[in-house]
Image 1 (cartoon, rainbow, N blue to C red):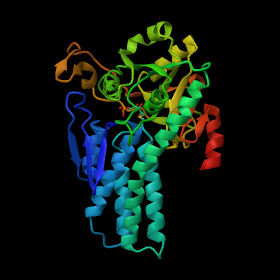
Image 2 (cartoon, rainbow, N blue to C red; image 1 turned 30 degrees about the vertical axis):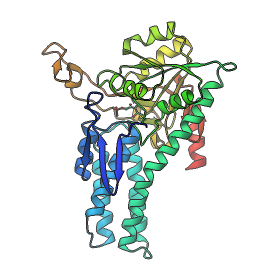
Image 3 (spheres, rainbow, N blue to C red; image 1 turned 180 degrees about the horizontal axis):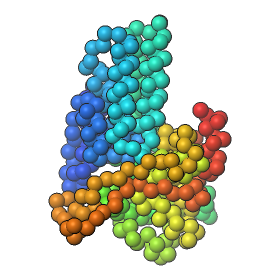
Image 4 (cartoon, rainbow, N blue to C red; image 1 turned 90 degrees about the vertical axis):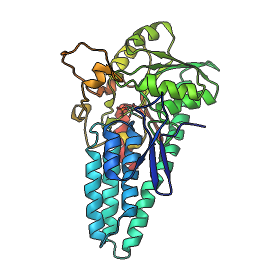
Length: 354
Ligand code: MRU
């Protein structure tokens, strides 16, 4: 059975505490928006799609318990709480896009005279709950489309070797994963020879979370530290790099976990294609390029300590940006649930679908 980062049943929301993995599997109860904000901000749940789903479900849990006097009051509370959730982490766009869509929905329902207060609540909660199933379906589509794309680059029945960064699997999404979903599908098709996953300093999502998922799912994999990427590309015949995204700008520039940019630069040198696997909810058409993406900076402690153990010299200054932006020119394609697009095709696609 695959790992579950988010459990939502009978209006009870629990998340797997990713700060404790892989040593302990412990679920934490999320009782409302305040808890939702905290678990996202502390990175007990992380990964762009999972952040949005947990944020919105924390609102669902809270709304279900609350009694409203009017649709207007409910609409105002929804808007305030969603804006608060968006402030929990700045770089991943999925929570912001979900908040905008839900605020629009609340506005429409509140204006529609045929909709009662109870109807408004039911419809609103249903829309949030549907996010879980939609995310899994999108990830499976990304897996199929991405696997086909990568296999189209190799001859006959050859097996492929993928390098990935950070964690984009069941732990970062409702389930299955984006980049890790592509890897999972290739494995299911028996076309995956091997995966190389980076440690992903400083939070170690690769060593702690991706390695855990790969071992759990018996996918052939090897962990490398971030500084081994060039050597792996030179000596291990990597077919493609597949990573996720926290925010894709309209021109295809992509913010993802710190280190993605340097992997893309190295891939260019070694003539290895870099694919971004991400749902349409990670694309931010409101910004023209990656220069407009706010990069979250995290506490020094994530760099200076491993768990409780200090590894850096006391007194040293640290710079800890959690993400970097890979320019569109280094990206071979963006694998979405609707197909694979070259970065410059995104504008056209959004014109058609949105
Ligand atoms: O800081 P994190 O762990 O939330 O960063 C996660 C990433 O950068 C992922 O690659 C991205 O969110 C895509 S998850 C499907």
